[in-house]
Length: 283
Image (tube, rainbow, N blue to C red; front, side):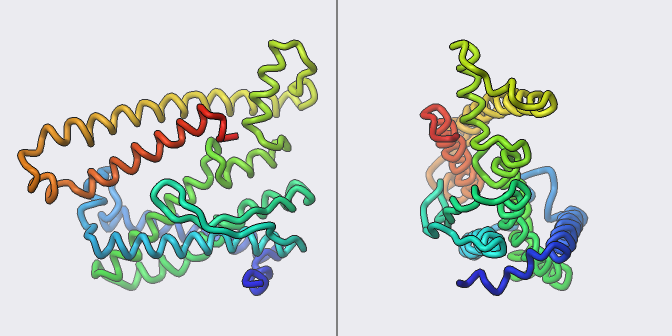
């Protein structure tokens, strides 16, 4: 019911206009942060303004943003006269995450499914419009820094959700665009069928889609290999070498604690993803 007031945002003209506007404003906001020096290519400069109060506020706001993201999916689903099967709360890596089960999406046309899968990113872009306005009219005070980091994390969240190698929105958008349900699972099944000399699905799709599918899994293999490399690299840099560099417990506590925490989170997150792939849970 809470999504009903927002379904007008998915009217054809409104959706495309606001989606493009939100994208442009979000990019403008990130460019502005580069010019301010808040965002650089050096991750240490990005972390230097963080403190415990900011981290706590950012974390809480990101939890609220998770609700807004799922609200986007539900609103899009309601626009096409469908209802969400389940709305719940779970824990993913180090975050509480809200999720929505939208099995009824499979009764819709391919274009409608893509719009629904874009719904979460769409609502994030709309919140970015407000965030950028606040950023432009505030200095580097606590509130100013808070909204600047929210803009950064929103932008990173959009990129993450568009990442097609995990079962995020980008994966389902690509799957719908290629019109191949459960893209990764289908490819692995059909790849096995080649060696079992069974009827192959690749023969039933166009040459263009076949090439795109093969390209996707070549890139997927490289991403998987690179993820393993990152785990090893961060393990060495943030766990082994970091402990070698510090002189005592006090320096460990007060020097580089944010880098250490984030390094461990990255290691845990990527390692968890690799284990899920190996066990066949990422499909």
